Amino acid sequence: MPATTATSSRPLSVSSYMTIFPSRRERDFLRRITLVMGNRNQRQWDLPALDSYELNRAIFRVPREEFVDEGQRQWAYDDHPLPIEAGQTISQPYVVAWMVDGLSLPDEARVLEIGTGSGYGAAVLAEVAGEVVTVERLAELADLARALLQELDYRNVIVVVGDGS
Picture 1 (cartoon, rainbow, N blue to C red):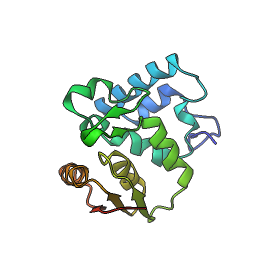
Picture 2: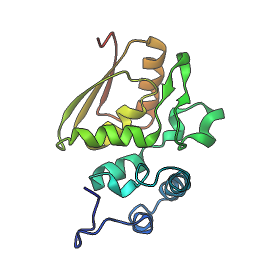
Picture 3: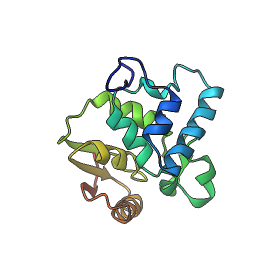
């Protein structure tokens, strides 16, 4: 079900999102994702198809460019995974949004994430859930993600080193 306005059941347009998310970084994100939408299957990249206003807001609030190497930041919002430390990758933002959307989390949910990676998914989850416990088997990635999440003030995320299998 598409996100809608409070007074209408019509889906929000990209221009509507531009007024809802007024920060420069949020508008830049929308412009980038809109460019991607123009180059991809419109149905797959139709941001209003995400079910909740809260999830859309979460995706815009998390600075994905902080979770990738400095040399990769120009591609932070492109429609493909990007390399991160330890030979791993970060998923594209729409895939993370789609997975979180599928959870239909209540506001105070406690979430267990397996595979912290850069911490991006945990940050998005932290925007919509009460608490996130994320497990990463590679200590190098866990330490980097923990430090970044603390720097970005995600106090409701706990990063654990361990085997999540």
